[in-house]
Structures are given as structure tokens and as C-alpha cells.
Image (cartoon, rainbow, N blue to C red; front, side, top):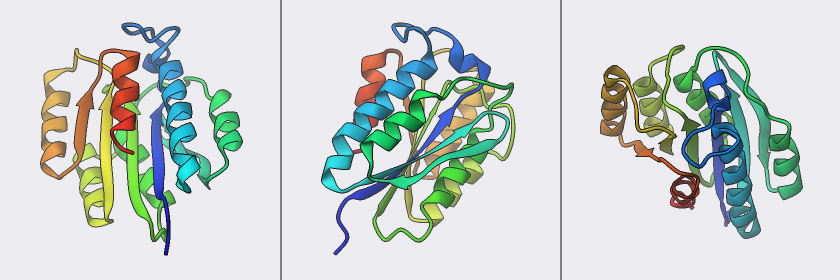
Length: 180
């Protein structure tokens, strides 16, 4: 019997994530890092594991699946925003690949500010998640999304992915904890 779940985080590190938003001070990225640490403190106690993939114009695997809280904190603490572009679809696909071979419930949580500018369509990555048996949640840190991006997110939700728009650090943390 396998206990716990496997969580794979896809974290946007594009330059726009370095900006302040609402009460997310000093930046959206720092608020996301704090939320990931809170998630880790909660789920790793129950035998779950966490992996982290970063993305901007391309995905960058940061941390393979681990149940070590200190390792998660250490890995995420040095992450900084970098690079132009945001390849959300590619980040999601890479986060799913990390979960291959897992016999646990698999969840990908993508954290972004919604400025998708690069890579494969988000809808394609959402379908990949669906057919891979992975629950996908995309948490968007913004309320001002361009209409074409909003349309893309609506199509993504048709594939079974959950899209959550958050406007504060507390709502971000609540959205992540909803996936537990």
C-alpha cells in the first residue's frame, strides 16, 4: 500500500514574477515560495512527496520528488526571477514528467501570473495531464489578464484542469492548500 500523494510544482520565474502585486511583497515570486514552504510543511508529514520545476522561456527541473522538508526549503530559498517569456505549458509538461512511474495520486500545481508567451499551448499540457492521470491546478496571480489569455484558460478548464485566480497572499495559500 502506497501512502501520501506526489505533488509537482511548476513555478513561473519570468521577470514579471519579480513585481509586487497586492499584498505580495516584495514580489509574486516570494509569495509563491512562501506558499510552497507552507504546502511542504503540511503534506510531507503525511508521507507525501514534492518536486519542483521552474519555468520562464523553458522549463528547468529544480528538485526531484522528495519527502525531505529541509531539502524543499533549501532548494526554493535560492530561486530568483530570471529571463523573459513564460512557457507555462512547457513547465506543466516537465512537472508531469517528474511524476512518471509514481503509483500515488499525482497532482501538478502551476503558479504563474498568467503572461503566457512561449512554448506549447497550455490546453495541450492540460490534456497531457488528464491522459497521464494527473490532477492539474493552475493558480494565476492576477486579475488583469489579457482576453486572449483568459480565453486560453477557459479552454484549459474544459479539459478538467482547475484554474484559480488569486489576488492576495492569503488567497494564494488557500488555493494551494485546497489541493491537499
